[in-house]
Amino acid sequence: MLAVLVPGLAAYAMCRSGPRQAETEWRWRPAAAMAHARFATGLVSLRDGRVLACGGGDRAYKPLTSCEIYDPRADRWLPAAAMDRPNGGSLMVRLTDGRVLAVGGSSPGPDGITAAAIYDPGRDRWTPIAGVPRSATNASLTALPTGGAILVGGSYHGNDVFDDTFVLDVTSGEWSAGPSLNLGREAHCAGWTRDGLIVVGGRGQFETCWPSRWLCLRGGSSPQLASVERWTPGDRQWRRGRASLTPLPYCHGISLGDNELLVAADDRSVRYDASRDRWTEIAAPPRSLSHRTLAALPGGGAVAAGGYPYSGAPSRLASLVIDSGGRAWRWGAPVLRMRTSTTAATLLDGRVMLVGGVDEQGVTASVEIFGP
Image (cartoon, rainbow, N blue to C red; front, side, top):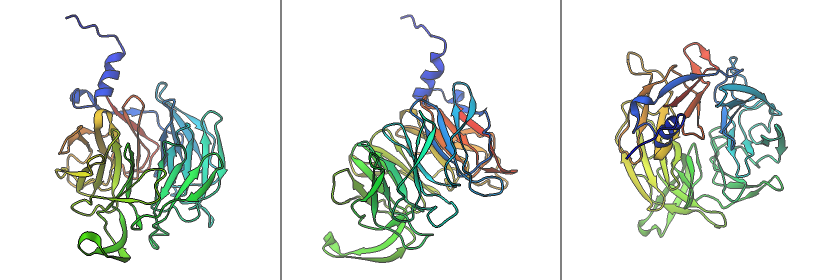
């Protein structure tokens, strides 16, 4: 059988299959630097393949208003409309209509942590909308397939952990109260699956239950949660899922495929299968996943990069990769620059970009891309 290789399609095929099939070809390569050095940047892949970077902190560790858009085909950044207020570490998601929602973050003024706005890429314009009714600090923000988004949990400066949720109607630009969580939580993981929204771990309220859950007492605060809650639009309450075997505080989570979550917390990582309500433990990584940035790879894998350097560790620049269905992390290609407080996004062609952060010289504008 004769195989014909069309130029330009080989790289795309490797992107879609992920690094396992072409492992030696996948590495980190430099990309055009941003116009502004920034860390804790809001980063969202747009529907047309470009990437929006907004806010974050500058070299003086002050929040930024500026935004810029990366074009991966031309490998260049172009200026975009600025946000109406300085904003560091805001929650940003792409809505189903292609616009981008930004909520909260660190900004001067009493309403900075509740402010919200929507960016229209076609018009290059931000439009302020109603702010959320309370602090969005350490909350999760997830776009809904029916349109709009849902804000879940959070806290006020690490205190007063919230169990309420708020749903955005994109037509009116208003927030309405959603069903309350069974347990208030912050710094948790959230991801959308075909079985609905899954919320995992974090820090939150203490709960003790008698056998068969005939009576539960809750209150106070607990530094670590292992519980799972599930919700789909239209539900009047959150349903409990099977808890993880051990707590997952301050976790990082991403959706893999359409029905699985990868959750990482320090030196622990697990897969959660939403359809089966089942956890799969992943062997401890060679280095802690604390402060590393996670991004999905084609075919259900993931890459972890960045984080704090380890003194005396010669492989401290290496990224970590887990393959689809894998139960152990392995070393990936070394990143070009050690950085923390960085942000990652998966491009439409399956490659992963790592943007800004803080390196040995301070806040950086550098960018690198993982791909074939």
